Length: 172
Image 1: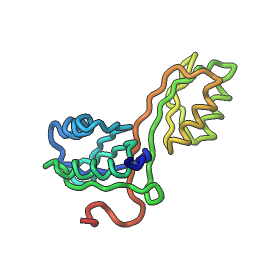
Image 2: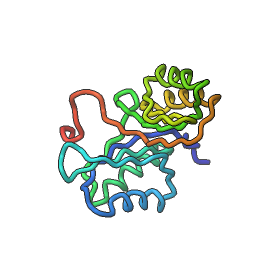
Image 3: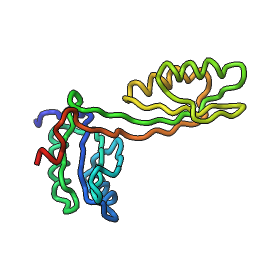
Image 4: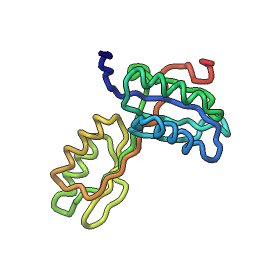
């Protein structure tokens, strides 16, 4: 009987050429092999023509190794790096529309301030709050805002960089 593979959350940073269809090729790689992508964020880098994909995936150690090998086979992929939680700065962004009228608006604003979130829109019946941080911080903010009534929610995946002076380019 084969040993049971423990599924854990992994974060990959992938430098790619900024070409049409690269996101499709990367996501197709995951789909074909049955891997579940938790989030995918694509952003430009300090180098023109190079984008950084931050991919969060729930997989076993073996599967993450396979994913890295498959990503490296794509012509447009420059480098793949697994980011260790202890050596990584990672943040997500969340926009949340909360019910707020004259009677409870100060409490909602105070709750946002505790989490260093910003009120970015105000209407007579609601507030839109912008927050950045770790998934745990954003979940905690939602728990505090829940009693006021969450009307809408949108959140991004992780954006991440390794800590320290070393860069992906210097690790080649």
